[in-house]
Image (tube, rainbow, N blue to C red; front, side, top):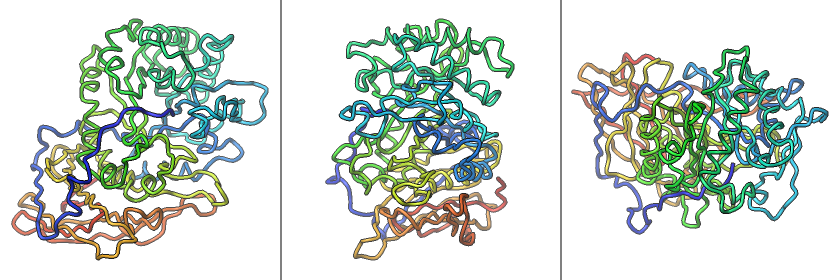
Length: 526
């Protein structure tokens, strides 16, 4: 992972009202049949992860000590959607991976330049891996993986390309048919910022070098593979961070990235806040208008990818609320970020991205769980995980689920229609009005009116709750919580579903500030 330098300016707090007025009722209506503007059929592994190379062994473990806590979390999400979350291994540290066949430990993180931009945010200057590194893949036997080849500090280095190919070969033979793709290089548009290229590095340089690596991997790694993997069109391209027009999907494609027919998909990265000093929960993460503006930045890139021949899926390869993770613990990794996760995930689905990978790091403040003991504390889950759990239950196991963002002029209230086989099955409503556990006033509630089909007699309501937007523990989803116990993920609590009658096609709800609700119509099946 490298710092992203693209962000949108949030609405000024001066232009916002302090809270949603409780005296007003907001009405939301989603058509009975899936409307124009809804997503396509959402892939079951849409909400997925990106693990940096230097933390892979923390999340995965090895053959002797598999990380069952991480596996249980992926299994929990899979039990709700019917498919394991996808995992991409990549980032700036993966662009610094070197393999040593005689190394006994799985990985060793080396910090050589402690004053560098990336080392200041915990990214090593070199990641040395041995054979035990690859054992971690086997601990997730049902998970599909993408592997990012090191084109960062191997290019032009004696033995660099050969090293990248050797690592790719080990990954392929370990993962086998579950290997989804190879990426080549991470965030080439800001290579100069992380010391991988000079400042005059150009798009033309990237296209030439990318094809060199893809050609070599295709002929020396993929050719004749016994796993049924494509030998040529097997690579994810672009993986940019800055959002500069020069590096748009359209320009990169027109510059010849696919001239040898290697592209399987296109990917970009984005962090909504980038650690800017103006960032606050309400004006950034708990702000539907701002979240929608960040997602819409990719409309042209998605269109260029989908309109290319052959059509290429577009993947948001890294996304999170912040990339630098400096002095922002009060804004990232708390319950307000869980609500941001839901809104961001549903909006990205509606933008018809193929997949969205939330970046996970052991010391990253926004990570959804900490997989190993850290700073005297046992592994634990973090509030953003509940955003994914909510989204997983909203989509459910139905094979033809779609999401429709209901138009709204309110910046701190969002609503979505969830469709199954083209018919309205659920509503998701998020009250993004910030309420903190330290507040000296009573928690406001917002009245919401939902239109439902006339045949609906009642609905089931599940709520995502916490003491406030600032809470970093004590989160409950429909009365349930999950956390680490004796090496595994343990569930606690009792499942709670409220039953509310529909009257003449209308359901009335009260939604407290800083809460999300999932409303299932009667007869709805996952």
